[in-house]
Every structure is written in C-alpha cells, then in structure tokens.
Image (tube, rainbow, N blue to C red; front, side, top):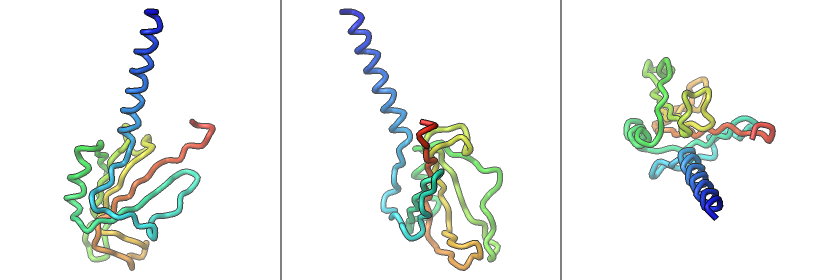
Length: 140
C-alpha cells in the first residue's frame, strides 16, 4: 500500500512539473496586439511563424515581455533603414533555452515593420514575431 502511495506522489509531481514546463513554453499575447495573417509567412516544415502588430511603442512592448521570458541579446543591433535610423529589435526565449540557436520557441520584437528587402514597405507599428520550430515525428 505504501508503494502505491509513493507511485501516486511521484506521478503527481511529474504531472505538476510537466505542466510548469509546458506553461513556460506558452506565448503570452501582448494586450491589444492583432494577428496579421497578411504579413505572417506561411508555415514551413521547420518553422511556424505568426506576426502580431501593435500601435504601442517598441519600449512598451519590450517592457511587457521582459519579466515573462529570458531576453537574448544579439551580438549586433538591428539593420539600418535608408533614412539612417536603426531598426530596433529584441529577442525573447519563450522556452527558456540557453540561446536562440537552441530555442524551440522565441519572440522577436521589432520597430518599425519592414515588409520588403528594398525598404518600400515600412510601417510605424511594433511587430511581435512569434517563431516555433516544428518537430517532426522522428525527433519527438
């Protein structure tokens, strides 16, 4: 009877731990941000990406995510716009991974939105790009 109690406790601890890990990998949507299906790229066999936009400032959106997820500092800042202004960006590791290369789920916050490589589609909105690596059946 005592062994059954130990198994029950161990199973409960496992369920709680698994729930915490799963909860740590969930993306929390920024209040008022809207999913933009028109600019979200189609999912690939490796990555699933959703893009949300917000009229709020870059700093306000970054401040929302800082206490929620581990921030990953890129070695260099964002690229420069033709105007000479630097694109602002920050990365957050939703799954708590060591770095971006090991992460299976991360967020990129960017201002402004740049919709083309020739810089012809620049919008004054803050972008929240949610990226998840897709696991195939062989790696589950």
